[in-house]
Amino acid sequence: MHSMYKECNPTPALSPKMLLFNEDLAKEINLHYLIENSNERLDILSGNKLIKDSKPIAFAYSGHQFGHFNPNLGDGRALLLGEILDQQGKLKDIQLKGSGRTPFSRRGDGKSALGPVLREYLISESMHILGIPTTRSLAAINTGEKVHRDEETYGGIMTRVASSHIRIGSFEYAYKNKDISVVKDLADYSISRHYPDTASLDNPYLAFFAAVCNEQASLVASWMTVGFIHGVMNTDNMAVSGETIDYGPCAFMDAYGPATVFSSIDVNGRYAYGNQPAILTWNLTRLAETLIPLVNKDKDESIKLLTEVLQLIKPVYTNYWLSLMRSKIGLSKEEQNDIELITNLLEIMEEEKADFTNSFRLLSKALIGDTQSIRKLFNNSRRFDGWMMVWQERISQEGVAEEKIASSMDKVNPMYIPRNHKVEEALEASVFDNDMKPFNKLYSVLQNPYHEIVGLESFAEPAPESNIPYRTFCGT
Ligand code: AMP
Ligand code: MG
Image (tube, rainbow, N blue to C red; front, side):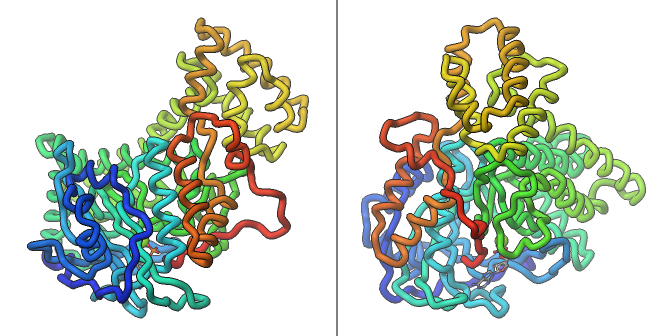
């Protein structure tokens, strides 16, 4: 796999300042000496000093960006410092993002802007707490340097911890020169790192593909059930591990609407909320193409086998989604009509522009006597009242006390998510006023998403009505 990476050192930062350091994560990945030694921590995580024996590398990858193949992407502003075994004995990548130019920087400066660094830190850690597989954030640094985006802003370096940084785009890169040995090496490596059980099966490469499909289907289902919109589901931003990766213009939806898009660059809504499951299959089809030579010597047979797996993605995804959605509305038994019940609720939510997160959260209150709050959220709609009756009837078939159902619903329906206006408020203060207080407050609220706390009402409210639609930008 030597053709897939290049050695490269980080560019030292001039006057770095540690803004955030995730001690819990540092413990999980056995980086105790970074907890104990704050000077060393700053030096290493700002790229000013290398960990002993570290030979940082930047990966090459390709990718389909908004449907178009770009053969030459790669870590343009990221560097892998090394790997470490975590407390569970699992291998983790430690990567700096924003530490200067690499051989894959093309025309970019290899830097990150501070705002997006803090954004990724906040949202990835929030996803983790919500139980959604994700890369993690170990540190955020203000480099003390200016970077030039649309306007001049401050530079930042993020330390990302991931199960690996192997993307669908990595396979596309390995495959693009039709050198099958490179694809084989990458597949063998990915199997041993992420899906070792598939190695001993009849057709390991087909089993590997099925395993990636399964993990990514489960991932996208979990995104959908918290209203998360990734924003740039290009194939280079989808990890074969099944972790959420590359937090660019991602955001959580307020009012439910399948067409919701926040990213300024997604003008056609390719990566809109409701399109994410279809894009999942589209992306995995790109991965399948790279595996054709490995799955079977006979190309037609190979395509047939891979297609059979591809056809399973939709039903597998729907199963994950249905199971999560059932628990969101308090159901633990499975009934034929559940999918209709859930779809009807979503339809009414869309009709009434009801807030996605609060709709589910308030449902449990209705079970324990407060029906007014949720009815108000649905503008007292008659259709919603009708839905509630059918739902109550369905709940009664569960044979479990309603208080108990309500309490289990509150454990899966978050009260607090990273609401866009709150995230923006926190980032403004951090970047422009040098004031980390709003960020730290929001971060602490998001660390306890399921537990309602009096006094935190504003964190559970959607953004005030505005004429200007909320927009997110890529530019880390
Ligand atoms: P993204 O979709 O934002 O993850 O990035 C797409 C590609 O652009 C990746 O190959 C990045 O490494 C590269 N890239 C983005 N920003 C920069 C930058 N400031 N300098 C160099 N490369 C960059
Ligand atoms: Mg990317």
